[in-house]
Length: 463
Image 1 (cartoon, rainbow, N blue to C red):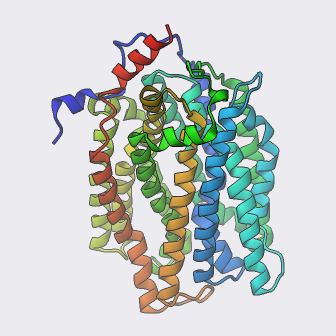
Image 2: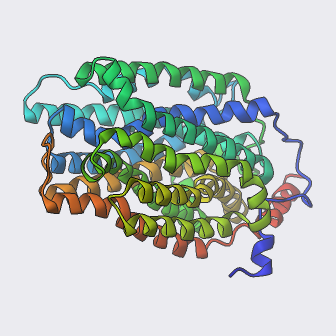
């Protein structure tokens, strides 16, 4: 399926002598905690915000879908702006790391605003939801997540170290996502249910997330020399943007990340699938565990598999495995056993891309510097959250629009046949389409085998 040359394109760069950028275990683990924090906010939003808006706040599903799409596209623009700010930041703590300190407390505010619904009119609720979503996700979350993602570039230039950082990042993110899926609904019920229950769980998640970001700040260090012969502070923004859009691997990886997060935006369908297709909303916890646990297990083997097959090749194989898992669910979509087996296999398939995508994005920074002489790690890595928000926005819009068109009405014990069909389509069929598109894009990613030579030439330029 893959050529020997492509198999050689993995994350090993042993022949290239880099400056000492080795990271200790504490630093790698601490870095991963940042993604646990991110998932306490973004996975809770992806998994439950549509449910919260339709079932708790009482906003129509179609309205929610439109609201999320507009909000997240706006969020994407703020991500790029924050990337430019990170590139210009100078402090004794570095350029990206200090933002974790500055934004830890506002992170708590973001959680609380997102899951609070005052007693307004229908229009008032929609306006409040839109404004607070923009503030929480588009501004506060952006101001902490873009710098955090940028640290993957500034902590080390070594591909093996980056791969291990990304594995830690993905593993803790998955743990956070699994915790959110398993305990959120029971915790909300335990804390009183309804609006108060959601507000209290938001406060708890916010405090835990803020403390985790502070641990990342304390235990990490930016050590990569980010200055190039063309000093960054003398490069106009328009030149940085122009250089970025000439970076074909950045554009390709951005497209892959957007597709990946369209799937994440659709993850909110799981609570509806558990409630209306499987007949028990508490099965949401089962769906979460069987979907995420295999991905966590895969993290223990990812470093070895990346070295053996390469990031791109392994991600393509994972896409095929994800499709197989979805097809198993399709066989008997109302059987919890069949759905669990299919979801487990789908989770195994999703692991490689979940780790590889951000390493691919980080590697594109060096490619861009090599090609144009301009290094824009903050702006380039902002594509991670840009893709995340635009992708989840599209996913949320598709979810709300399709359910709305199919006649779904929130709060009803039973739904129409067309509404139930739309839930199945969103849970099974749309993810298959997304996997196929990702495999096609990954086929054109050829940077793995070029990266060692690029790093060697970049280092020679600085001598």
